[in-house]
Length: 537
Image 1: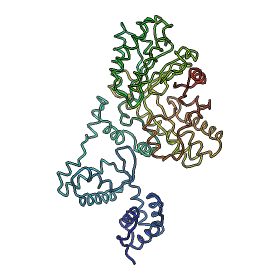
Image 2: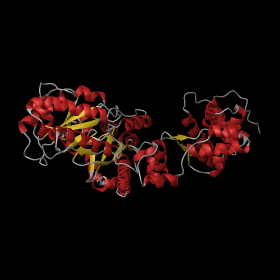
Image 3: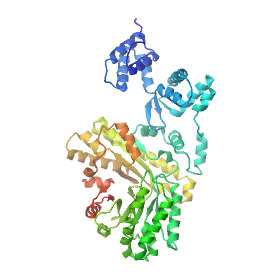
Image 4: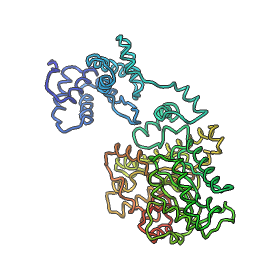
């Protein structure tokens, strides 16, 4: 039997696979046969080469194929909240980058750690555990000083759990790992890591609701009204994942304003607002003002000043732009849009309160706070290409999100620091953002735009029914979620660019929040009349 020659000049991927076959117990003849077959696949990816290798081994040596298959199931949960195939090269590279160890020692440790992981026969391992195993090997070889360079500074899980009963403040990275390790059921954590679903602000899953708003209330004077409400916002901001939002800020100021004083009071408020929230945030904050006076306010407010007060805020949008804050202008009738000064106004969002009072929670219209924000990857579910498979997978994903939403509420409802501030997680809403709705419809139907639209309508109806009450269905606009899904799908279907097309469907816009863009007041009024919840201008 001819012995496989390791010195044979083959591609690095093929060489790696050959070594794995050897470790799986293959004979030299089998390895030679495999190498000969896969070396001809010049344009194949490493994933495709491994699949072909497994097929070959299944026919040539079933027992070795079983061992080889277990190697391919070795996956790593990375610190970036992704799942990747185990590669001992990453151990070697990190040792050389972070320590003074020699390449020979790094390669020896990488090889031994890989063998140990294979012996353990586990399907998933975290980068943190791999680092611990490497540190043990460093100590075994007498490299205590190197181990100090490579050590991971952390905190025991028990200590984190104990701390979180008193306060939500902890390192985001630490909390993200803690939630994936101890709080979120493993099967759901893996769905998040595989980008089938998305859990927004996963580091805050067991400590904070996603989005809150503060209702402004008038006090004894203008100054007290401004600073007592801002103080309350600061307190709430520490207990929420996204920037805290405001509601009816202009209405609360009106009892202390006359027509000539609107500009000065607005300027005073916005200077105080910017000094309290000076940083530009990743997620847009909404400063809610109104074109009408909500019922909770007294009758002493001069209603003829309401539109003028909104105008005074619009004039100051440049200040708000600096800190990534958008005006959310609530209106209870489409006709009041005409009261806005000028035909075009910049960087505002109209909040549709024609049927009931809503606020904008960082870009989601709701009548209550949001406990959880999730995403579902319709684009990935559509890759199967069959309608029934798509709905089966989507239904499985939605079931997971419902359980996660309930779990988060149950945990947060027991947090004393939230109870102390009157925050009731169980009474909050949850939001599920859809990614790739139109693209998945086109992928499944392979037909006309009409066919795709009908399938999209069917999908939204299915999702709304599966989720039931307590959930807002919207388009996924979370940048982190979109980035994760795009990386997973590798743009297999087109997830974006379909907003205006979807807005044509009355059926979809009644069940799903899609932001409409309006160039002028007339267009904005038309969208409000159709029932669109948020209209950007």
